[in-house]
Length: 384
Image (tube, rainbow, N blue to C red; front, side, top):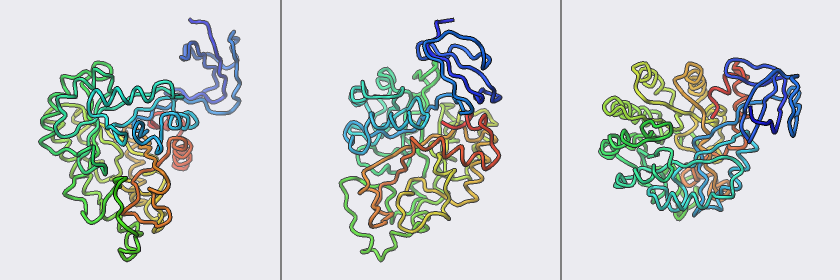
C-alpha cells in the first residue's frame, strides 16, 4: 500500500451498501484503503470528522461553464470552486453556451486551453452534434471529448442548431465505431423535446443579442408561469423519447436522456431498459425539489427547459429514481448574468432558461431525499 498522505475518520462513512464508522486512507490524492475507524495509521494529516458524513466525491455530468466566449456568465474558476464547495469533485462541461460551441476539434482545444490551470476540481468535456458536423466526431473523440450532446428542439442560441431524425440516423451508426470512455461506443446525450409539440408563441431560452421588449407590452401574460409551463407540455418530451427509443432499438447505440422532467416518459424508459436497450436517463435537483404549484408569476429564477412541472409529477420522478428507471441526478447548471433572468420584469418569454445549482445540489437533494425516507446510501447511488 502506498504511503498514506491523509486519513479521514468519520462515524458516518458512506459505502456502497451501508453507512459505517471507518477511516479512509488517501495517498497521492486517491483513496487507497478503508479501515476501522480507530485503526492506527501513520499519515501526514489525520482528520477526525466526528459525525459529519463522508461521501464519495460527486461527478456532475451536466454543467454549462460558458467559457470561452461568455466567461462573464460563468468561467472555469468560479464554476469549479462552486462545485468543490458543493461536494462535486468532477464536472463534465456541455458543448454550449460557450463561444465557439464545441462542435469540432479546434473548438474543443480552445475550451481545453481556457480551462487549463483554472480548475479546483477534475473536469471533462462533451462534444456537440449539430447538422452537418458528422465528419468532426472522430476528431472530437481523439481530442478528448467524452461523448456527444445534441438538441431535438431549438437550443436558444444561434450557433448550436438542433438536429432532426435524419441527422440522428446519420450519426448513430458512426458512434458505434467511436470508442468512448472504457472502450465502449460513444454515448449521445439528447435534449429530448419534440419541436412539433412546443407552443411556438413563446421562446424557451434567450439569444443574448435579442431584445423581445417589455412584458407589459404583451398584456403582462409573459409573467404567468402556468402559461410558460403550457408552452412546453410533457407530450414534447414523451414524443421525443419515443423516437429515441425506436432509434436505440434500431442502431443499438447508447443514448442518454438529459434533464428528464416529464414523469409520463418513465413507463417507456422502464420497458426499454427491461428489453436490454442501451438507454439511460437523468433528472435534476430543480425537478425533484420544486413544483409548479410553488412558482409565483414573474419569478423567472425558476425558468428552465424542460420546465418544472407539478407536485404529482415530482413525486413520480422520485419513484423513477428509487426503482432505477432514472439512472442519476445531474445539475444542468446553467448560469447567466442577473439581467438576462429578467428579474425586474418577470418576463418568462424573455428570461434566460437555466438554473444554477452546482454548490447547492447535494444539500438540496439530501433534504428532499430524507423527507421521503431515502438513506445516504440511496443518495450516493443516484446523486450526480
